[in-house]
Every structure is written in structure tokens, then in C-alpha cells.
Image 1 (tube, one colour):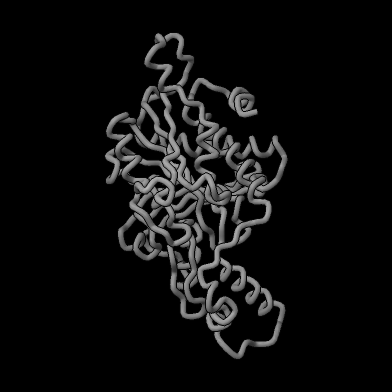
Image 2: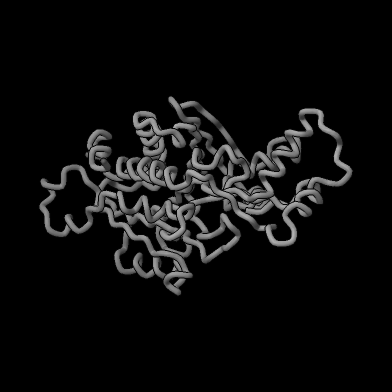
Length: 320
């Protein structure tokens, strides 16, 4: 979503939590039709945003629905125990979404890893899919008593339009039509307004997702309406716009009592980034390590959430 502000110009974020913060900050009060609540869960902070009306959704650039944001710096650390603790929190939130659709433990799940596996910041989805415990093929040849609390799960990484020449939605819709899963769980890389949330925040939503929207390359959406089955979207910000970093730096200078600017912040940003870098996207230097750690945590969370008979210890042993 892109917000336009007279002071800052265009601001891009995929996080409903950030969008609400921006709009509420501009209004000076909470936005009508939006309900928020936060709680601490161990090393993670969980914020729930419910967009209740179309008007509120339009103001935030989001579809009405339920959005959960899980923030934890443990996702950016290398502490295995803390990563697994965050994964359990994420798993619990995904299970809440599944229960909200009233699915049984036998309902087939299809996991879709969006993104370009050749571009590290965009490779989160494919990396997660590599670690998903797929079981649908086993259900076709095993008796019920041998399934051990597993759910039928299949997974696919459809690539991107530039690799396949086919819209992601067309690929996924074709598979859904053939496989007929009960629901689809989609993983994608997102964009954030705040550099501190890159690689440390997970958003889960029941409204689907638009591949490529994080960098302004909006494709056909993967939603319940377009696929015909419920869609749970899971995303992690891995990039931020360069102008966002400049905005933050200017705010810090202003807060430290620096000299007043003789021009608007937007004019400063435009001058610094013109003429070739207005749409410059930035990712951390250690993005390869971040993707590796986050994909493991997300895969662990999804495996835990989808397979009720599997313990956390078993899941993370499987991922080693």
C-alpha cells in the first residue's frame, strides 16, 4: 500500500498495523471501523488489527478482515531456542485462523511459496516451501490408523511471471481447481515502513495477498474470491524503500535540534534520490542469513499449525 502525505510524499507499507499507525497519527485519533489490541507472548509482541468496514479498509489500503502482526527481534538473532519460541507463537496464531474457518484436522491444506528464488530478499516463500512437511501423497495410500495426527498437506512454489511467463494467480488457481484443497496458506516477502521491522515481523491475514505488491509490482491477487477457497496469507518484511531511511534520518535530525530545513522533507528526498533512484528498494546486507533463519522459523510454525499430532520437538528435529 502507498500512502501520500504532503510532508513526506509517498510512503509504502504492506503491514496493516503500520498503515493504521500512519493514518491514526495523521488523524490524531484511532480510525473508526478499526479495532486493535496488543499482548506480549514471551519474546514476541502480538498485535491484532480488525478492519470492520469498507471505509476503514479504503483508508488503510487494505481489505476488511483480520490481521495479526507478530514482532520479535529474536527472528533477527541467531538464538535457536528463541527462534523456536517465536515459531510456536506464530503457529498458535495460524491455528486461530484455521479454527476460524471451522476446518477439521483432516481438511487438506495447500501451502504456496510466492517469490523469486533467484532473488534472495524475495526468496522467502520458496525457502519455506522447501521445509514444509508434505503428506497429501501419503494419505492416498495409508490407512487412517497410520496417519498419526497428520493433516494432508501439499506445497508448491509457482515462481514469478518473469520466470514462467504465467501469472502466479493462474498457476495457483489451476492447481486449486485440480487438487481441491480446503484452504490455501500463502507465504510472501513484504515491504515495511520501518527499518526495525525488516526480518523481525510476521503478518498473518485472512484476506489473501497480491504478489509483488511490496515493491509496487502488483499482480493478480490470491484471495478467497479468486481461488474459491479461504486464503491465509503469511508475510515477512524483507525490504524497505530508500526514501523511508531518509525520512527516518531527517526525523532524527529534527528531534536532536538540528537546523530547520529550508525546503520540505519531500523535496529533500526527491533531490537526493533523483533522477534514477526514486524507487530504490533496500534490504539488509545479511539478508541471506535472515532468509535462512526466518524460513526455518516460519516452516516450523506452519508445520506445527497444520499437523495437530506433531510436537514442536519433532518439527524442529525434522528441520535440522
